[in-house]
Length: 146
Length: 146
Length: 146
Length: 146
Image 1 (cartoon, rainbow over the protein chains, first blue to last red):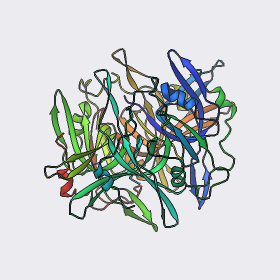
Image 2: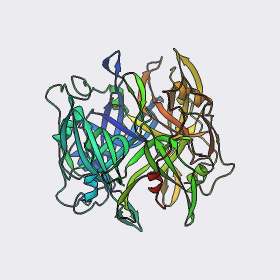
Image 3: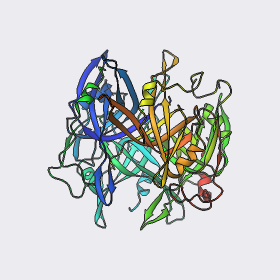
Image 4: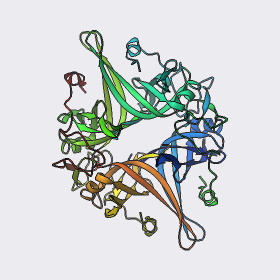
């Protein structure tokens, strides 16, 4: 509880590193996020912020199999600021996101999605066996013209 | 200003509908979101919530070219609750998300990403010409061991 | 898991209702959220969205003791869309936020805060006994001039 | 566009600093956020993350008039990671939130709210003149029993 949550759209700045941690897996990558805003009618880049993104369990393996350096992604997760001391006594700070979800940013390109053929026992949690639910009829009526 | 913002993980419950609106395009789809929680040690599904998701400009065309019925996605955007009157005088309510971003949910499967070959003039805003930034050396030092 | 999360700034549209639910308490209120945007240089109101906000445990009692009809608040929590059938067979929809946090919106006015004199056993979770942490010296150096 | 957004619950770790910036005002404070989680049935504190929070326009003045060292607040805004070079050549990192909203965290205590007596010309944007909207009758019917 009492967690900080963040949504970061950005570019993957390096390779994805997949490691074993005990009986689980973690996939990590560096993420660069650069806001854009209008100044006097022109789009300009703001300064780039860098994050370390950690993914766990099923998300770790799917990210390792899907995300490449240079991909545009959106990351949602818990944020923390790690401050630590180097060997020379100076301090350094890393901003870390423990990801709840990762997806390619469809503002920036297209993607094709593949669901696992069978229930994945390493997924974050078991999902429904038969895929997405079917909407009741009233919901379709509820769809607005625009 | 004063907007409500939402993050919805869910399954695409129907086909994506791409339409011309003035000089722009909008892609719409229905999204079903079903939370899961543990009750007495077992994972159970909560009730399903249904949303209408609207995507604009470059996001609209990329979603139309990427998202299929049954895909797992994560949607981030502005939330509104539309209440309207049917022909018979009864009222109906539709919950709408005007999407800021859409991506496939890599908790649920894998995806391959393709960037447009050239600058896309219909993108939401012009992006950097040469792709993701290169991290300065200090950032790599900042990567924690775990 | 797989939850939809939302942030809603709005006005409290009715009285706060505090009820006993088993051994816990729930405080509920109706919340109206009206986005504002610029059209041809003028600020205009968009349509108002209505939500039911539920608060639990310590948050319930603090909200019941703090929030009044007409207050401006920001609510963060889990979103769900409840569709149910009336006695006459028609369906109705309520959009519900199970609140993680509630605070008065300091864009809209001022507020004075009072911490409980003693550890509150009904709080959402036990907090640190002695209040906020003291920042290490390096953090103060890290404060930018602007 | 392409911004990172964050929600941070935390404790105010210092005094609020209100400054003139051109024709506007900015209020800044340091914020400490400490997640709590259960380990073997006991609540324990995680490491504390520190942020610099900047507030602008009407929010700046209301925060300066409302927020004190030791208050519990929830901050919503845009996140950036500033890395800069000290006089001795070493680098330092500050994590900054440009606040969209700030409110006292009613999980942690109670608060009383005061709206400005008159329209505040320095507010972030002009609001409706007559306060919160009145809910139509159908909405009240839509209120669930629990």
